[in-house]
Length: 232
Image (tube, rainbow, N blue to C red; front, side):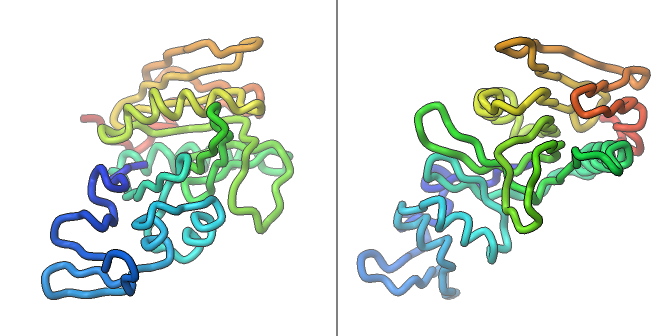
C-alpha cells in the first residue's frame, strides 16, 4: 500500500498549504486551488481542523473515494501500487482462499481494515495487503483486531513503514502468528513468526521455496505466489 500524503507534513489538506485556503476560523469549508473551488468532505474538514476521532475516521471512510490509514489521530491518504504489487497480493488471496474453503479461517484483501491498539494508549487503523483471520467476524464489520496472518507487499514508498513502524505495531497483536513481508518484483520473503513470547525472523527466496503457514493450514509455493510477476 502506498502512502502518498501526510497531514500537514506533506500538505494533505492544511489551512497553511500553499495555494489552498480553508477559510480559517468560521470558514465555510471551501478549498481554493487557483480559480477552482470545491466543498470539503467531513473527513477533509476534520483533518484540516486537527480533530480526527476514531468515529469521524470510520464514518469518513465509508464515503471517501480515497482510502486513509489512521494512526493516533493522524490521517494518511493512500494510492495504488504497481501491477507486480497487486499480482503478489492477489495470488496470495487466491491461493490461501482456495485452501481455506470450508474452514473457519478466511482471507481478506486490502479493502478491509486492521485495528491495532498502540503501546502508547492510542490506536491505529491500517489496510494490510492481505490477512488471514480465524476469529469470528460479523458480516457488517469494518475491521478486525485479531488476524492470524498479515501480508504486506513492499514498495519503495512503504518499505520503511512496513519494515519498521508497522512491524512494531503488528507484533503487539496477541492473535498474530506470522507477519509476511513480500518483495514485489522478485521471489523473496521476510517472515516474522511467533516463537514463544516473541517472534523469530526468517528469510525465504527462490521459486522452489514454499511458504508454510501451519497455523492456518496453508502452504504456498513461491512459484505460485509470484506467478505472472515480471522481475526487475
